[in-house]
Amino acid sequence: MTDTFQILVNATPQQANEKTTLAQAAVQFGAQPPYVLLLNHHFIASSQHDQITLKPNDIIEVISAIQGG
View 1 (spheres, rainbow, N blue to C red):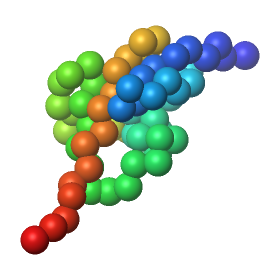
View 2: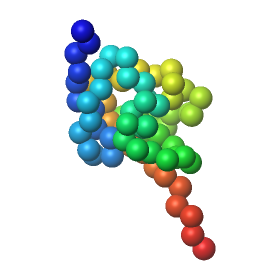
View 3: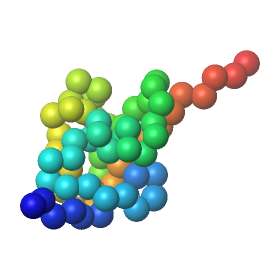
View 4: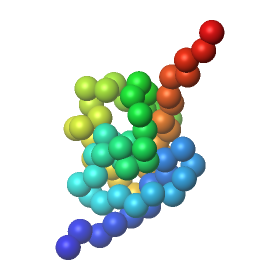
């Protein structure tokens, strides 16, 4: 059994476990492309989203593009 822990996604508490990737957390939060992710205030390249597993109390910021004119 894998224990869960808390992370923050855009200041909203979410549950994760030791196998949760950054990409999975973004999907769980409901992020829709295009977006960029910051992990603990550091930009993470999209090529790394599936490779980074989360730790307790990680802070994720999802920044979405806004279209306008």
